Length: 122
Image (cartoon, rainbow, N blue to C red):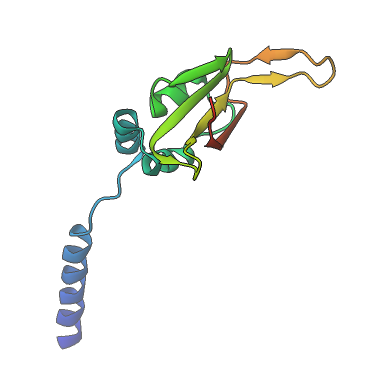
């Protein structure tokens, strides 16, 4: 009987402790925070949600509107709080273009074809 009471007390204690843990923000919260603050921490959280083949609208649901587009099909998302030692902003480059390897033709797919995180010098 004592063992059963001890087990129940352990379960109740663990239940209370687990409910006191801070909630880990999900992608919706990280997306909202990134769209407002353009901070590196939330951008990193969202990177794991991006998948090649996602539509442009799906990417923009997570990240918001891009900051800049140097060429059609390529978009930049700058961070507001991270730069290289030389002062170049760090950001995410997403590309909705691919090249037909047989013809060399550039194809605007409307799908996420590549992405990289690093210095954005434009």
